[in-house]
Image: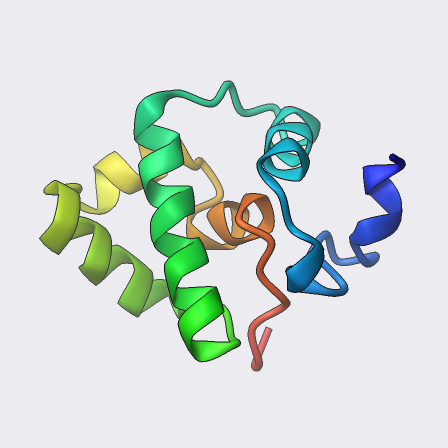
Length: 100
């Protein structure tokens, strides 16, 4: 499968329903991220939010939830995803958040 066709020019998925772990692994590699168990925790958290709300979580919500669930402060989150929640959202198959 050509995963590049599943994302738009901004790097977000066109249709989050087409997301798969294989897509996530490809997108992470495309973004220069070596996925670890810690990365997958964040991606899974994003996926839960995307599936439940049909939108990508805002940066504030994502960081607050990561802190609550996993104890990551902002620095810890950015250690995993250097470009922050935007990058995590791209790996998790999120759509471009409104206002971006």
